[in-house]
Length: 631
Ligand code: ADP
Ligand code: MG
Ligand code: ZN
Image (cartoon, rainbow, N blue to C red; front, top):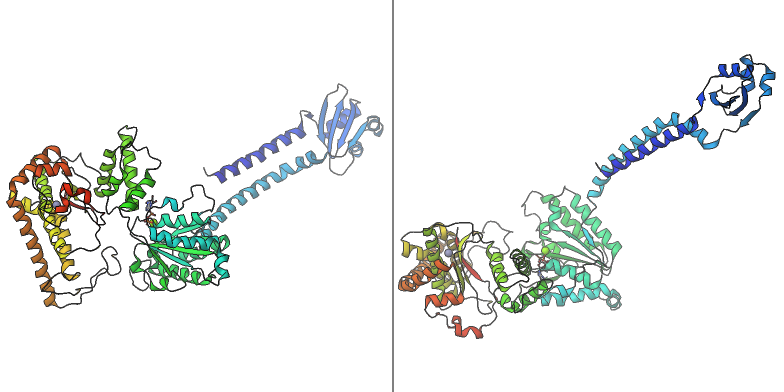
């Protein structure tokens, strides 16, 4: 039952109860009589006392009993009795007391029987009316309950201390904090405080976190709304929400308005994608109107976040709007260590656990991935009834975050296991024997997520650019599994399908995007938006002739064929090492780097990848590559 209904019922019940109590109070326990009997009793001298209160007559008899009766309205008691034929003398002889009808109980005794039904009716009507109105109100407020608010003195305040890495972004935002704290300082110099800041970065780099930290540092309220919240609404509601959000912001100034995932509403207008198109445009227009509407130094700073700056409407980026743009870089090794440290704070780590080592093992992880990693490790430790989190749990969680949970329940038959083992060793062996490939970190045939087995290579140094040769070797490594299946078993399984997708994409990019084909030259074929920022154009804009298209295909095929040949040659030439590693892998299921090196017994082709070079390894920026056999 809903609380309003319950309250109303209790209220009505209480009124009924008081009515009953009051009614019984006025009745008392005297017996009733009527005027005719009373007249008779008076005539016979049985009555010793009369009390008249309004129309009510209380009679006291000789035997000290009492009775009540009502007389007619208007006439006095003696007149009434006289009309009933009582002698006036007899009436006079009886002491008669006339009382003012006693205030409230008298009135209630009249009102309750007459008005209670009306009062109840009114109550019920009022109650239903309120219900209906409530719904109306809610419908009206729907558009206004814009976003959420974290007050300036929230308990779990987030500050810059809670955000590791992203140094440049923090550096820029310190200025924003200054604006919010001491706007006068800037106004005095005639400086215009920026209205809008756009945070750009891949998912999980800490955009939302950083925006909250700015509010926390400045000690101002944080009003936030997510772009995706607009998408699910009726037409017109988005715009009214924006209006209300800014209304509240102006009242709360200085404060921060945070619009998360602004690309959800801020896409380039007129692109015609998606059904809620009008709604988006209206919402976006309203954001622009609001941003233009307030004074630059009003103390409201709008921060927006996106991982798709390429799809944003240019109007958003015009001066006076989001003209400060800040990029959040993915964390490098030091950042990762710092992020891990933050998320290790309230967790009991075993002594001797090296967070540095964890950071080394997690290139390509975002801040969110690392937070997730620490959480998974803690859960794992609890499930294993440990008193603290050990390195085992931490390392295992890396793979869980990267590839999904282990699927030990998935039983492979002996033949499948063997194929998977050779497939993975194929990747690992080719990687090990090519001079530019990254060192093999781990080989495993334990199913994880969608993969039946996996091989992890971790880059050893900072990498911002990559060469054609590296890509060619990458493709050979990618086809190592396929080549191994073909050579060892003379057949191909579906396990190599994701490998194939991957290398085909690499070959296509080499030819059409990176100018790495001599035949086709340094030219881009087909304009495409960046791979990370898929979205604006779903289809490729084809800007080349059919003749070139054929050439592109030939070149892609050539690259793939060359890579496959390389992989096959390496595997055929090292069949013995291959068998050795596969045997150990089938037995142990997982080989860490050291075990793999021991089993293969061949020196790595890349001198930097040899164990003795380990000390010299520099920081890496690339992503750890995983070659997985699809399940
Ligand atoms: P984004 O908004 O960029 O997608 P979030 O700010 O939502 O990423 O990050 C998600 C979570 O990941 C945060 O709540 C935090 O726990 C963690 N995280 C991300 N980046 C960092 C960082 N630089 N320092 C500390 N924690 C981070
Ligand atoms: Mg976010
Ligand atoms: Zn594979």
